[in-house]
Amino acid sequence: MKPWLLRELSLEAFQNAAPYEVAVLPLGATEPHNLHLPYGTDTYQVEAIGEAACARAWAQGQRVVLLPALPYGTETNQNQFPWSMNLNPTTVAAVITDLVESLTPHGVRKIVLLNGHGGNDLKWVLRQLYGKTPAHLFLCNWWKTALDRFPEIFSDPGDHGGDLETSLMMAIEPDLVRLERADAGTMAPSRFEAVNRGWVDITRPWHLLTTNSGAGDPRAATAEKGHAAMEIVVERFSKFLVELARTPLDQTFPLVPHPEVSV
Image (cartoon, rainbow, N blue to C red; front, side, top):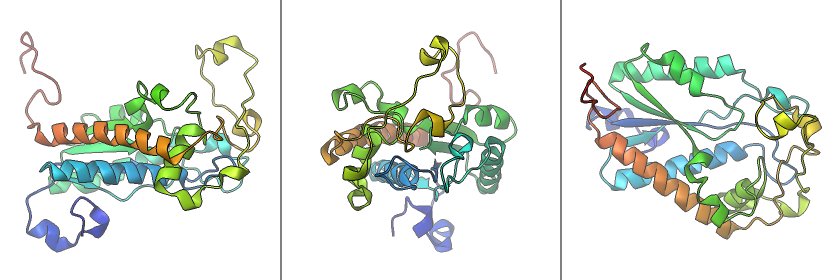
């Protein structure tokens, strides 16, 4: 039994132990990732990162627990590809709300949403729940934890099923990768410069943006690069979990008290 994995715990583990300080909810997806990666790529990755980070935090004496992952996310712009399993943003928000409400009556006050799917826009969910739950919610999009270090490993990490995701899958689930089947992951540009430069956002129609759902060339991927990226992400995320677990709740949590602001 791994005491940082809820799926392996029994009721007795909670009855006879100190309370957990932090609960981590992984959020994955079920969608195609080019021709060479499985539909469960996002879920495999976020679970592996969550498990490794919680194990590392537990080894440092912190009572953190990883919840079972939600294997579905928002896929509205991939609906032309078969078996893209969509939950609308409001549905994802409702599921998160229900799960938070399941935890808070049992004293859980620190909850981290560990997001593994780029199609999930979750910052607004934190705002919607703020003040409506006694729990403090945190959001980590795992790929953002190492954006400053990825250029050391990847010439182009890619957007979806590219070098980063393929290398990571080669490191954690190598038997599910068929790199010889991958296409180049080229993407069609927008007709508008403002969109191409990121000044204006759109929901990209994935069946028009890509050939086989891949965005970014995966063909230079290696397991070694995946392990290197994984280590950076897990080290940084586990450090945050340790700090979060150790930090006591008070009137100004999670901020440093401002000397000119009274609470």
